[in-house]
Length: 184
Image (tube, rainbow, N blue to C red; front, top):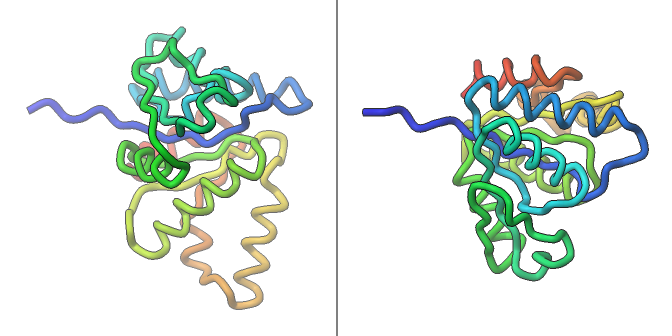
């Protein structure tokens, strides 16, 4: 029987940020995923880093599965040029569907929604709801403050060191994809 293709959910901004390296790193992540035969699951938009990532995976011949709530379908301009766009009712439904579809979760730079999404699946991992890798693609040190905050949680005994050590942090698309392949 043919093994199911692996999928990584990528949480990222509906904006591109203020440095060209964010777009460059996003495209490199797309290339590493396609080269590693990994499909993309993402938020379903065609703007910002989300759109860049989806477009690049499609351009390189990969498969892209977007999940978008009906309320923000127009706000994030739902992407109609991907493998499959799944429209759900709520943000809760979006996250549940993305979690069900994915074998791992990585965050690229993004806003509060990106942070909320990666922290929620990281929490689910801590609580034993899944054993899928979670990580930060730390482009230009974007997540340094978050990583320091996690370390402070450990220092102040609000987070165990073993849970802290589960989050994968890499500043290279190649290394983050390689790390996920080892964990999936």
